Amino acid sequence: RDDGLRIYTFNYVWSDVTYVGVMAQDLLEQPQFAHAVQMDADGYYSVDYSKINFEMTMADQCVCLD
Image (cartoon, rainbow, N blue to C red; front, side, top):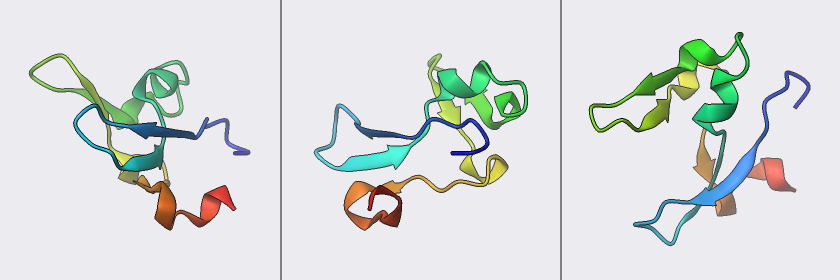
């Protein structure tokens, strides 16, 4: 992306579904995106996609991979 966001495909360990999204650790390295990252009570990062103008989606429904 032109704004510097790196886009990944990934699977959660509990799911066979492949998603397209960003990694919280990448966002923390970029000051303009760090505000979109939260840490939950278990110490895991999560991304508030509404703050970065991107929507995490399932890979088989993503036109961004075409």
